[in-house]
Amino acid sequence: MEASEFSADTLQWIADKNLWNLWVPKAYNGLEASFVQGLKTLQELAKTDGSLGWTVTLCSGANYFIGNLQPETANHIFLNTEKTPCFGGSGGVFGTAEQQDDSYIVSGVWQYATGAPYLSHFTLNAKILSDGKPVLNDEGEPLVYSFVIPKEDVTIIKDWNTMGLQATATHSFKVESLLVPSKQAFVYNRFYLPQAIFKIPFSVFADLTLWVNYVGMAEHFLYEAAKILETKTLEPFHNVLSKANQRLYKFAERMEQLTTKQTTITETYIETIHQAASVSVKNISQAILHIYPLLGVKACSQQHPLNIIFRDYFTATQHHIFSRK
Image (cartoon, rainbow, N blue to C red; front, side, top):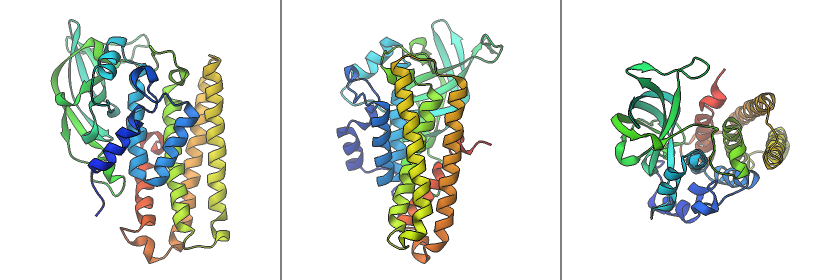
């Protein structure tokens, strides 16, 4: 049976490599990887094991929020602890935060916190309330803040029961009437740190970090399929992955150029990247589905690498960024 959680040795390896802090500045004990370097690291991890790549991607992606945290909070979490922080949580707005002086009373249930058992802190989004009524932003829409909360204040709901990515342990979690200081609130795309990586729009950061996972898992699938099928049969699949790599890293390199020069990144370009990533993932999925029926009964064995990769990959494709219509 596949493990439902990573072993202590795997978690220690991740900590030793400081992978949770892939994007965190060196001043905060991180690796401070460039965008391209970080993407290549995540791709190699996904190519090795889907759950490993996915978990490091989502959790290091949550640690990326250090750039959004108020300085006092960032210093407290990343500089005053013996254990490496590991963030994770939910991108959905599934809770509320009632204003109370300089704090908020946070309640709700959030789904899909990748790496839930491994986290030191949970991140969540909540609608802001005042006297029980939604607070509106400048556009007249409900105001939403994000919060970072220590794991001790969160109840994990063990409900991750999927065909793949099992060791990501992407459970739900609950917070009940928790008093949270306002210093633990943050807003996406409002940054306090100067590094170029934090000037990347979060939607672009999310698109490209997930895209490399699909490519990495597919490369692993192609490697295993080559043990069964001849090269000519796999050539179209290889071409799809080659094109994906070229487009992905062209976008990543361009993003590095734009953020270094502090050039405005337009909504049109952001949407261009998302559409390219979405089309690429669909093409990769079709390539896998074309090959899978040719692989024989072996690939239907639950413990065969091809079957594990297949289940991991198609579980990953259900992430809302790439599954939405």
